[in-house]
Image (cartoon, rainbow, N blue to C red):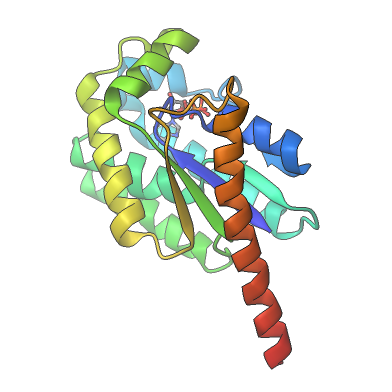
Length: 214
Ligand SMILES: Nc1ncnc2c1ncn2[C@@H]1O[C@H](COP(=O)(O)OP(=O)(O)OP(=O)(O)O)[C@@H](O)[C@H]1O
């Protein structure tokens, strides 16, 4: 099974991924920010580095998908390939950080990749308000993120809501995280686990039904 944690910058994906790994014994697939050769340059000059960064993320996420396809255990992934493409890259294109030609080339590459990819079984979307994201970004204090424009975060947030609500075709569970402290409150974490358990039971039920029909 492939489970994805989706959400804007600072929504708490990594924290939740770690907690779920501990609770369910799932295998984590995390985004490594430290190994990213473009991120800090990108935040200084988005127009110059957007294409480089997006292609880098795309090849990382595609490699993840290929490896997850062969995995026998349940994998929980911190951010999906779809968010990079339909939220971050689309936003960069709209902001004029990527030319039409570059965007078309990038999308052509993504569409070819999708011919061999499989949708995740469940996407858990951590929905957050912009002030909550800003708070978390300040708290974790990554240098290159500190001068991020509020508008950048807001545009991404609007895109997230639109994408998850209106376009993503797979199974999703949306969790409003503004008033949850799942890192420190057992009750808040248990509230999330309960909702995930319901989803898992439904997925298993669906698989049993399919099996019985064969
Ligand atoms: N496709 C992308 N295009 C541009 N920037 C991206 C993309 N994917 C990730 N990033 C950037 O990479 C950095 C790390 O991502 P992010 O902070 O969302 O992950 P995280 O640290 O796991 O977040 P969370 O706080 O939810 O755990 C962020 O600065 C984010 O803007």
